[in-house]
Length: 356
Image 1: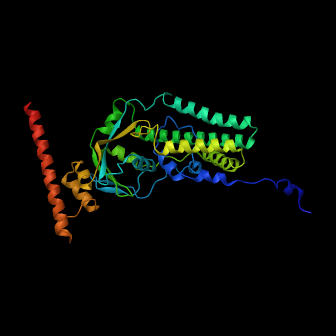
Image 2: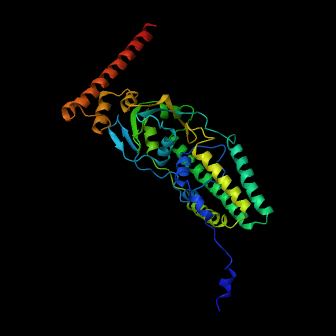
């Protein structure tokens, strides 16, 4: 005889199209986890939104190790947002390393709504248009799908705004006067030599204050549980409904998701030098170095700092304490020659300035 209630649902079929929302999740999380504003895609839905719902945008990534050559310690894991920022900004063609310079702006990045306005307008037009098309067709699954996509984008931006505020709070710790104290705290005082190695053998080298070091090794606060819950509901509704809506709604949804995701992954619409609202980190010179030796020379290491890096195997040990004496002897001969030459040029420059 069967069960009439179950038979009523017999024609209903679930489509597997929702699985496409899982594609590109890691790349999306890496791109938006760098905490950078995008004037095009900030309010557009993206693929892989389940990572947003799980608040895995700034979780630490393994393989990023920080070496403080001036103070003689290392940190095996750096903050998740900074490791993702490095992925976006390191010179991929130069395995030796890239040198960066930290600076701070006295006026917060995009203060007000100048940059947010285009992103909000694009989001309203794209998401609103998708909802309108579905409603005009009488496609209520399409309306639910488009609404869930819009909610997911709003939740993602709310989470990112919270993390950016958290990062800015770390930057402004104990700062009462932004115009005088903040530049000194970030750029003044004693600058320590830092080397950060990545899982693919690349490296970032720079000198920064200890305040900066604390910022890039401190994890940001997690998102509020309510935001995560709403994000998960939106993701589930999207996964189920996109497979049930009309063909036109499906095509437009996939086109919007795909376009926004590609623009986000390739950092279109982003000033990649910014980190949060106050910090700006720029590559120096022509970018990366082909040899790690050349990258480390950019730091003008003291003998003590070079000794610390030797202990952490970021520089070869001296030839008398290892078996491969020929290789290390050649390295240190070249290293000492380059170091002496740089010090000689610096001395000559100082002498010319004093004479003038």
